[in-house]
Length: 312
Image (cartoon, rainbow, N blue to C red; front, side, top):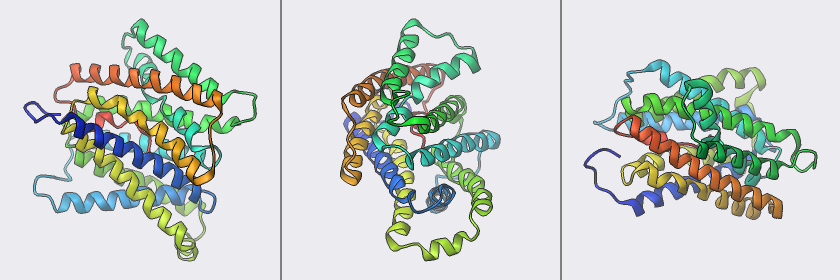
């Protein structure tokens, strides 16, 4: 939120909850379509349409530009997010949406570890407590050896680590870039990575799309639209309220994911699952708030993309 901008915290919170709802619905749709189509095709469709939407958006705007001051930042950031998305989409083929979302929501907690290891930042006792609490919550959700989730839990963990590195990089460079330009490069980098992977893994992707039933094609379009809309809602939210106010409300995604998973698949977390999700939500939201406050102290103004902690 730039200095002197009008503050509308309730509207900003509404935008963030809307973004969280978009991502949770997208994840549920990915779980549905993943039973029929390859991960690479879903990834390509998600980022391809994202890039197309942002290309039109910027081309029609007189205030926006495709020019970036840090092209290597844009490429590295986009690659980290594309990898996180690939891991997330693969995970959603193998585990319930609510439990998947809970593990992904460890991102702010893991970002604390990445900042310590990568940037040698000092970590306060409170942050270490939140890190420990977040991982305890994850162990409760996963329950190693129980056979409930199994090795598939490693996929969202890999996504969360990649997204944490993405967050650290974003917090250092994003204040110097237009968030709409950055959002365009998110899609462009993702589709550039996904295209050769798609061609290498699917014999004839065009034929697969042409022969796919209408609901599956519609689901692919919905995934791309929901992902792009979610990112744009996060950008709009930062124009209405400070990041420190908005950040904890992204954890509404946990509740929406549980509801969407129940509606679509009849899946409901058990009592231990709910407990683990609650612990992750509390520790993650607190860590996210502290991370954004630290970034706000380091850089002014805080860019909208700094609150984008969801690996989609």
